[in-house]
Length: 190
Image 1 (cartoon, rainbow, N blue to C red):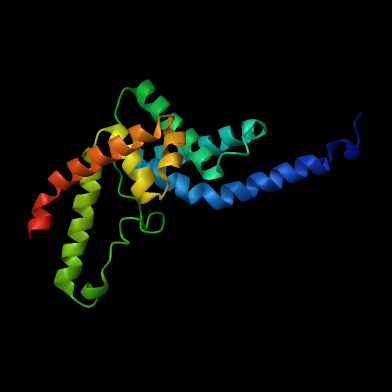
Image 2 (cartoon, rainbow, N blue to C red; image 1 turned 90 degrees about the horizontal axis):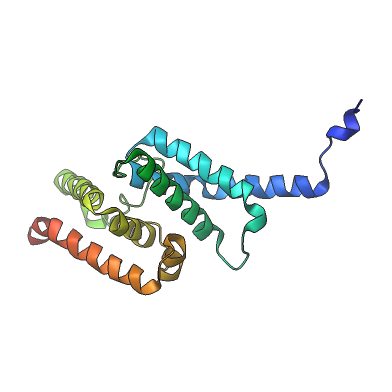
């Protein structure tokens, strides 16, 4: 019969557990926000985010140290969203993320609008229109916009995350921005 000493964890196991715990704490909000932007289903996004970290834990031994951790996690998240999309045969959609989880769109400059209710309402409407316009982009274009323009990944990191050449990322980003410009033209004329 095994005694209590057989249940102790080795120092290597404890180190992996602590490393993984730090990884989750550092990246869970960013990954959840990214998945929310792609799925339009907050409970689904929570499940997918948990799955991202389960997969990351299971494959920590295979992680190439030459890649950035966030790029690796975004890649796992992207693959899981695509897999879910294919399995359920429905396109991922945009979701308005709650105020605590997503500051990227609300960080539009507003220095001259402070204290001006009309300007504040216009900014809120612009943010809503930008979110809606991003949501209407095809998945491949939306992913590039979210990763590069909203999450701040470099072209190279986006390419690694999506598994495509840097030139493809630049092309998709150009096309996405062109579509967004057309969709938001009426705000630019005002």
